[in-house]
Amino acid sequence: MKSPTHRQSAAATQLLTPFRCHSLQRRTLFLRLGAACLSFFLAAGAASPAAITVAAAADLKFALQDMAAQYEKQTGNTVSVTYGSSGNFYAQIQNGAPFDLFFSADLDYPRQFEAAGLAESGTLYQYGVGRLVLWVPANSPVDVARRGWDALRDPAIRKIAIANPTHAPYGRAAVAALKSAGIYDQITAKLVYGENISQAAQFVESGNADAGLLALALALSPHMQQAGKFWSVPAAAHPPLQQAAIMLKSSPNKKAARAFLEFVKSPAGRAILEKHGFSSLAPAAPPAKTP
Figure 1 (spheres, one colour):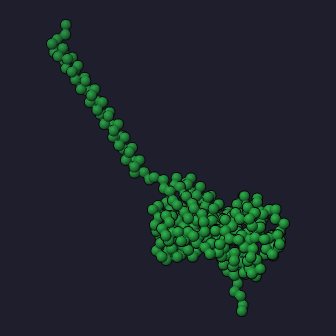
Figure 2 (cartoon, rainbow, N blue to C red):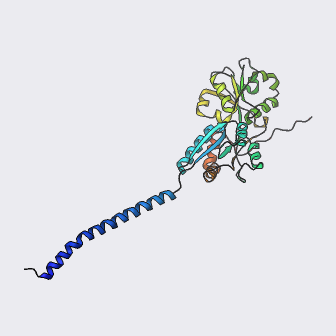
Figure 3 (cartoon, rainbow, N blue to C red):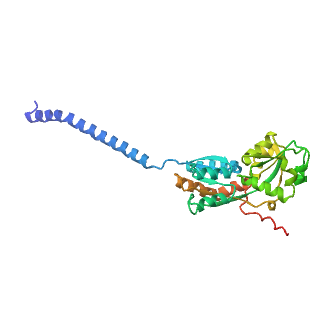
């Protein structure tokens, strides 16, 4: 027979058991809530991938595609590139176009942004020197590699595509080279103008022009190499196509933009640029003409 004391103890235990269960459940709930809050604040504090926007000269299409792919893989950031003529981008950026970086086909436009206070001081970087080529379709009867400038006098060459020299550095280089060769006045009636160097390439590739003075960086693309043949214009025939990039002061993603610019400067970035026809040193300037 159980004693009164034992019966009282058992009864007390039965009374306390529900309270112990509720207390354990509350502690478990608090622990779970605390873990959820910690996860939330850690996630909120973690850096989100950045998306940067780039305005780039049209000759950079294939080089920047390769660089952006590598940069995105390494960082998780994304790079959105708009291609066009440097002069048009210069006007658009002056009017507030929202870009983080500007990759120009010349050195002058970025310098003007820096002087006007529209770019971050100290970010101007000359990433390479472009080259000009005379390109014709693979089925053209004209042997440009052998004839050079003289090929443009051939009756089979009725239209010659170049970028618009008003706002495209490659167009200005083409005009300078034609004048240096002494044939500009002879072939000026044959010239057709693309809005940028990429559109000039499209003209000749599509058959709307018979030849084109194009960027080496475009001519070296696998498709263009298969579709045509080219002759390299002597570097001394025109002022050097010194090309530069700069970070814009209005950029809302300066940290990511600076990181991409540093990638362009890196050995990996340099190797990509050289692969696509951009040299790191400026070729010799055209010799001075004696009066």
